Amino acid sequence: MTQPLGIASHNEGKVREFRELLSPFGFAVKSAAELGLAEPEETGQTFEANADLKARAAAEASGLLSLADDSGLVVPALDDAPGIFSARWAGPTKDFAQAMGRVARELHQAGCEPTGTPAYFVCVLSLAYPNGELRTLRGEVHGTLTFPPRGEQGFGYDPIFIPSGYAQTFGEMDPSAKHAMSHRAKAFAALSDYLQKERAA
Ligand code: IMP
Image (cartoon, rainbow, N blue to C red):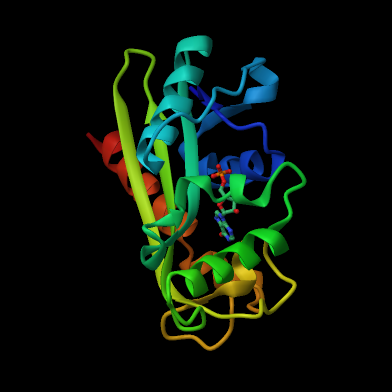
């Protein structure tokens, strides 16, 4: 029997990705739009807190097992900014050229050479059960920043991020290469592992 599962996202791209990941597990995936879910305010101070509050709100409103994510770019030399504010740094028009420019500017102001600065992407997935239980999984990919931005692939901060051991930015790489190593891929792998173990138990 297929178990319904709510996705606490209004982003159709994310819902599609979740649907693909979850297809081997026989879930009947429903998006936030299909379930008529509101988007809660992201008031948490960590990726985990924000993913948990979105998943919990969806589980409470729908009565279904619900999955949410939160992700962003962390720059330790900027006290972990933009971090949970990664989307918000791009402003209402989602201007990532501006957000990437702000990263470079703030690194200069902090006395750091922007190119070569260590950084990492984080993706946290949270699975909320209708009984209030939560399962939270994290994936990270580490690398360095480069300026000016390079490449037209991907989205967000991809053009300034070079994963460790590679020469190209995520913005220059073939998307399949990025998807094989990304923070999202690692969090999804942890979720698949967890679901497989849960099924076997
Ligand atoms: P969220 O939808 O609240 O998780 O926002 C995450 C934000 O982090 C996005 O808007 C991007 O700015 C950034 N981000 C997350 N993952 C990636 C990625 O794989 N590449 C580039 N930027 C990313």
